[in-house]
Amino acid sequence: MGGGLLVAGTTSDAGKSVVTAGICRWLVRKGVKVAPFKAQNMSLNSFVTREGAEIGRAQAMQAAAARVEPSALMNPVLLKPGSDRSSQVVLLGKPVGELSARGYFGGPGGPGESSGASLYGGRREALLGTVTECLEELRRTHDAVICEGAGSPAEINLRRTDIVNMGIARAARLPVVVVGDIDRGGVFASFFGTTALLSREDQAHIAGYMVNKFRGDVTLLEPGLDMLRDLTGRPTVGVLPFAHGLGIDEEDGLRVSMRGAVRESVVAPPHGADVLRVAVCAVPLMSNFTDVDALAAEPGVIVRFVDRPEELADADLVIVPGTRGTVKALAWLRERGLADALQRRAAEGRPVLGICGGYQLLGERIEDDVESRAGTVEGLGLLPVRVRFAREKTLERPVGEALGERVEGYEIHHGVAEVTGGDEAFLDGCRVGSVWGTHWHGSLESDGFRRAFLRRVADAAGRSFVPAPDTSFAALREEQLDRLGDLIERHADTDALLRLIEQGVPAGLPFVPPGAPAHPAEAPAGEKPAVPAQPSDGVADTVSTAASGAPDQSHSFEALEGGTR
Image (cartoon, rainbow, N blue to C red; front, side, top):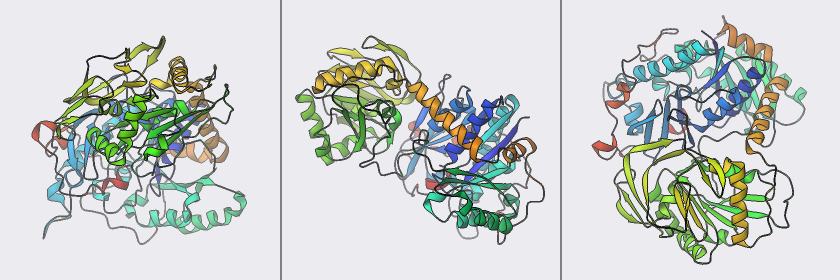
């Protein structure tokens, strides 16, 4: 069995994904066969593996850091929000239905009940068994597995149902390094408080801390690190400096205000006389917004997210991205006046690109009895396309040709599009005038196709923009991952990390009071849960599948905010 380590965080967005990817890249450069793992992820930013399984894009990028093919084993449970009240549950790469927060986690029990145990039943044990089996399979086939936690391990309201932080750490006997974002402030309190809120059994796995995004002279930080060690008995195993452009594919855009945000671009002048301005409509439940990263990597291309019609005025290209709520996004565009602006653009021959859900709402009609259950809804009518939502999700990795160039992409959608006309075919979609639509995510990462598309956009927009002839998006990604590996190699205590990975949980880690009381539902430390005969059994009993009607919308889904990220 290979070694392992779990990277937890004091908060969401503390840098767990980046640190996990960096450790993977550092290890693989040392000749270690390593794999990433995240037991449970909450994200609208997903990817399709070669076997047709849907996983979080962050885990796919971490697999690239480890130079291994991504697999459903690396992210066995994926939650895809459909509203603030419900989420689609993807188990081992396949959707199994919709659940409310209470339906997934259980909720407060009635009088005399133990904190919702009767509602939750045996699902935690079943899911923990499933994710533990996936982790063990990766550890059997790799020298090391670097696991990523979710949110904070100190979310004591969710500890009973945890399968991604201390739940998996204890089940798999993993040492835990806690990452804190010092740029937010309060990092020492966060490290201490995170540890002190854990039960004695959970604390026994917290092996050290890692400071992320530090600015300034590290010697000024060292007295605090010494005091933290005196208080907790645990070392700080790295102080990573603040650096721009190191974030890999974000897990979730729901918590981030996209208004006015600009995707980070290569600092290089345009090759032609003009820049090219790209506006991305920040639709609700936006998914796979990283599709535009390849555009932002082009010198002279400026990408920004917008939510007002006047912000489209100077855009040379408007992109309507993917969304987990096509009908909801369509209503939002109309409410904001963006739908009218898009229709005016099309009439004026100014470029528009719709991707996945954005492609669907540019069509004539949407029949949706699955996602929104809104029935038949009129689209924007910019493309001769009729969409019908199927209960089965399309999960594919297509390869094709467009604009004379080879294109690779991936598809994640319930909507089935019938193309009834158009000026020319465009991947699986079509083009009419200056309006383009396709279900393919990731197509713009194909360098030749991206350059050909940008030339067409520049011509239609009347811009003297020339794509750089040598921009390789894959090479830029590799450089980014190498920079993450460099951060770990240069600024972390790599000897300490190797000891944790190889030797496991250190003995004799002290208890930091007060500690949270152990919940009755927690398994004793080191005890492996039972594994269900069928991995989906633990979910299927209360999942509201598409065939069984609307999901439970009666309780807030906010409990997922931190504990499942």
